[in-house]
Length: 385
Image (tube, rainbow, N blue to C red):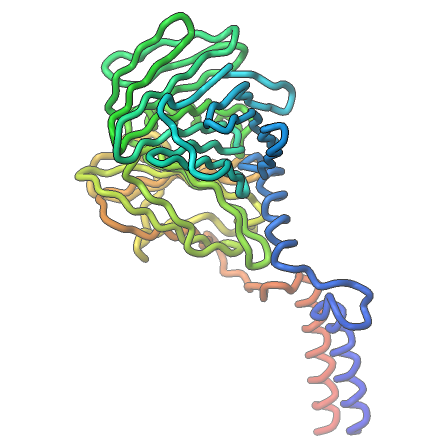
């Protein structure tokens, strides 16, 4: 009888082994590395239309990505800034530059971010559907110049420092801090004081949720109500992210990212409530039939509400909205007061509780394990009898 129990145990373990030991010394496969997982994160993000990898060719000075491409000279002048969509490419700016930019080192790309550091300023671009182009000053003033491509017009918005640009099927905004703004024959000049910024952001057509809520979010970015946006993709313990600070004094940091749970730190100083936007692909937030997304602030569950309530909130109650697209989710969160906060995005069950699965095991593995356990139990019962 002992022999029979041993056979059952061996068969059960053998059935489990191919699932648990996906890579082994005799498998003929090489275990994935952290770099492999990071690349998969970027592929997942690009497929979900959140962000993608930038490449930079120092010889041609070309910066290329799935959603944005341009050239950059050694003095920091951006040329032919182009938004790439699934069916077309739209050149938005012939040129965009800071008049007093003094480079320190060479341009760099890291993931979805292009960065060129100056002695007292920074130029950044994001390879994402909003095609964000970002100029910041530090300890002294500077002037940012945007030269529109053919087919575009610019209009300064009343009672603000912002400019709306439109043409060739694209609508976007140049959002500025306290500044002097002038428009002359397709050239937009922004005189920025120290510790300020000017950024361009398009209303995306190809995004993780398409154009759902995009016009409303863009309006609140202009008003200074939406202060930042984070896009995250996680895979097998690694993560890639793209973070955009729409106000100069905001800091965003992804502290933890795994399947079905994110933790994002938001740091700012405001006397009133503000909003942040979080984009997550469906590989990272993989919901079962009885689950939904829940958001907590500093460990406390927030209230779910419609998008207008979240974006227009001014009271002391935190709220969030979830918009679902074919490839992922866009979450708008209203933070009612500020210092440093941690936003946790995770799942919760909406109906009957379901059995959780161990990370790395599929439903098939759970079934096989159950069969093995039943076989062992049957053998033991037989022995006792």
